[in-house]
Image (cartoon, rainbow over all chains, first blue to last red; front, side):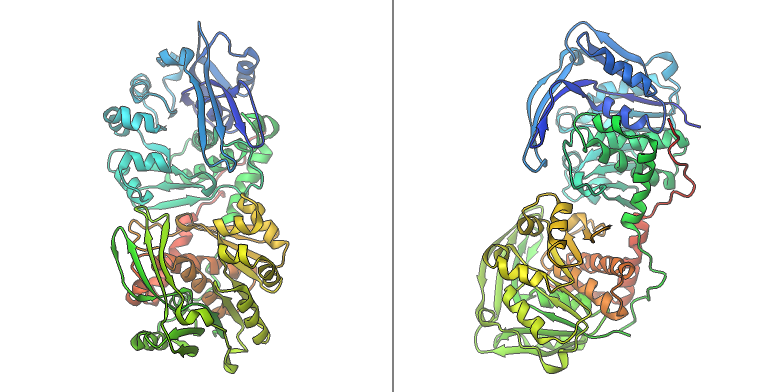
Length: 312
Length: 312
């Protein structure tokens, strides 16, 4: 029995150049990557804004996948566009152009039927808007948010206020460091945990992701891929897998959050195998289950048949 | 029942500067870090060279720990000295000075009692010397080697010849890339596996280490540490834990090699907690067992109570 899963964030058209090819005005944005990934696990309620130029067939496909678009407003003007270029090793990217278009005036308005959402993901937008979403939802069971360096520096106080109201923040290494002022990821995590959330997820790209709780650490590797085409959206697909699993099981207990990490890593790995959301268009639920379960083998060892270290 | 474990490599005096302090002429070198780590698990046979200036009490302490030094030759001249400085985040280091001293003429001669060694680690030295060690040992069960970019570029053919004679190579990300010409670590691993070894271990520092076999991948995270003082020797301590576990169990089967990865990560994590080998002087077998077993919890999740992804 899955329950309601709400995501608020960008719906965009991306033009991406990697060493393996390029796309122009392909569907993207944090809320889109999130929705595609989560939709394998749970129905999704999406709140965002698009311009008049946004391809109608793309919106239709999202609906077909169980994404409720009554929170997506179409405004006069241009859709949010991002243009970026990755380095030869995909480890760095340069933003060539950002055209906010209608996204510049985005004020998320949560439709009445979405206000009962049990699971809420606040994708990377202005923390004031993230807070305004929390004012509109009733009593979510689990709220996670993302952010970026721009807000960490520009709206630090609001972001710290937001931290007091979320259960989990999902950031990458660099963001965790900038936010906390600590280079060491475990110290950074502790700093953040002392400011509100009970969980911090630090996304580490090809190295996987780490879940930090007050007393425990959980590590999930990245799924081993010999071919990575486009890292865009991996973090949001991770969030989609993570939150989608929580919503479909309606269970935010510690052991289930570990499983959510595995679904996050699973969906993140699919995201990078093609441009845009194209890999999600190729796979079905069986591929998701198979890959998620493969993580067990990837980290499995047992000490049952192994002796303790002998006393000297 | 542990069996013989042989290591051949550098025995040095390190002067290291980190943001947290510095050391001068502290005991170091690949074979020393390896021996300290392995000695918790197995007796060690060490082959190396020191100058007349090498502190006698340091050699004595190694012996006390079960390291057989009959393969350590003392030569007229100065011991190998390395001086380095780490960046603020410990992620980069600069070599300030290297004085090879007696190490420049090191020609490993394996004492007769060491030639039956079942487990052999060829630490980072000239691959011609690594090959000469293999000519001197009889029938080892498992041979692992390390190397560095200097040899990858300068003695590539010899190194490729060595690869045909080892079971396992342990390198870091950068070395795996330089050796194979592949940026992707799984492609790099496959390239190396096609050239001889049945296992490649890629050490990834704070991100852990990955074991690559033809059909399988195993990932062990780095032990979460809030304080890291000095990364020097972490890779060699990893090798010491890994090979020490294989030797003490006399078992180089796949499941035991995974456990060896965990002991490797355990010993690597102790190495970085203090300068030089000092952390190994503080801990006992109980600390090693406790930390190794903590890795289970660090990656544990189960899917038993979790449903498969429903068909759409």
